[in-house]
Length: 315
Image (cartoon, rainbow, N blue to C red; front, side, top):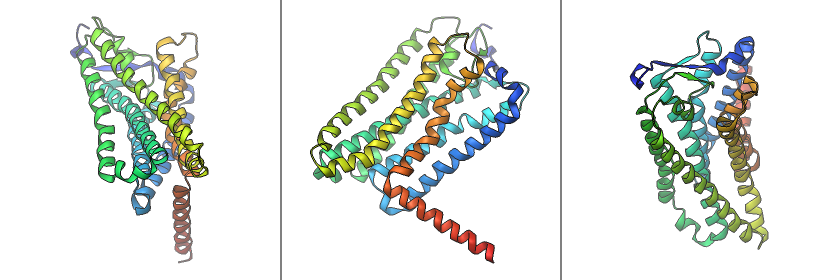
């Protein structure tokens, strides 16, 4: 295979460890994906339908939940189909599309978290300027950029990958990953390495920005009881969410580059999908339980649905 045009499909060897448990894993996968859909869609609808939640922080949260749906849609349907299939392959174009969706999902998540950190910084450290700094128009622009920049950056990454000459089509994972495809290249991958390091540094900058913002927030919050209350109610869930996403992503990132070949394939698979499995479930739970406004609205919505269901049964 001398060039990319000869690569029609990639084989995914990660599914070799799932053959004996395919029905069980398929059932768990469908159940997990349904839970993800219900949790995230419920909170998205709660925020959209309630005008009292049309504030910068909740608009950012809504985009975070939309991003969870976007990212998991790039993985779970294909994964569930492959679990019941005897042949575990993905087309060249499908592989690149999956890389684009999953990688942009991660980057959008970090960008939205950085935007939320800035929102909390202004709310707690500069409360008198909050409504002028975080106006709805400016929030809309920042949210749009939080999607456009990651999508454009991942488009560049995928475009560079399409220019590589590949000498193989075997991917040792259960989904397509850019690093796994780059390792199949016959020639130089210097451009991919340079841009990869640039984008990694760019998003490490996001993490540093979030940390610096919260150092300032903590300093300001300690000065008053109201500041401490705001920090506990709105910042703690955000920090838990950041820790959740970062820990899950680091597991996959570190293993992809430094993982041992002696690790069982089932363990490799679990480590590879943590960031697609844990954050989409825990993030809506964290925010839904801790943020009082959202918790109250969700409870009201559930009670209303329950009452209508009871009325339907009586009829």
